[in-house]
Length: 371
Image (cartoon, rainbow, N blue to C red; front, side):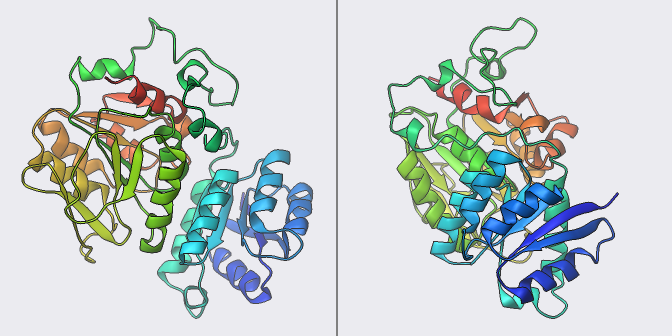
């Protein structure tokens, strides 16, 4: 059975082009169109598509408002199209917060002619998020959490279905805590790698960390270069720790998370005390790459390391984890049920390198309990 797609865009050219590209894959079928957010809500209700592609700038109702209403009425996997600009990044991050699962840059060039890699990427992304047949993820904690430092988030974690749960805060004899995998050792450094679904997952973790957090953090999120500065600024505004886009020579400091810049690679220096930011090359598929940063840490950091591999397509991070494990690092992977795409965590887990599986709505709580 084909995956049913609703295409939402105020441009007739883009609507036709997206349909042409998607239906080159026999697994995909465009079942309807909408040229504004209000019609998108109505069509989502009537057609019940498996996936919606959504533009953000439209008449009558913008894309973010449409996402928010669709997710409230009938949660559906949504892929946003965004411009490659700072403003486009800001709007895209707002859409992800509203409930969209993924995004792709939108340009006339990428949709014209044969489209090539851009066409295949669109097809793959739509099919990947379509596998989320039921959406259980709640919107990421944001300003309410960050503005309430006295509120104990750990006391009221959310289960995967959004209901209140105490399972993460009580000792469960049938399930050991991921913290036990550290064997009482304090990590010198925490690293988090992610791709599809990662911006919301990383935010979910970081907003739960307290001010004065005693560990440094490195973040590697597959993201265009025009997006990472906006993403870092957003996280820094919402979190009680400091978050910044990494610059060459930045020191690794407790209570600070450094985000690898899009289009570049972030490595650790020979002493493991600062990061080097270098230009990416076509020899490495992802820029930034989880493998590159993890491998650099394995070579240059002495002491206990904790690495988390979160939701994302592909297997970036697996080879970096292999190097880390040789040096005694601890690896946590995100659980399949809480992933947008269970690709990167599965690659690590099936290779036998995951020490613990964690739901994303519990990962931040566990990290906050590290002292």
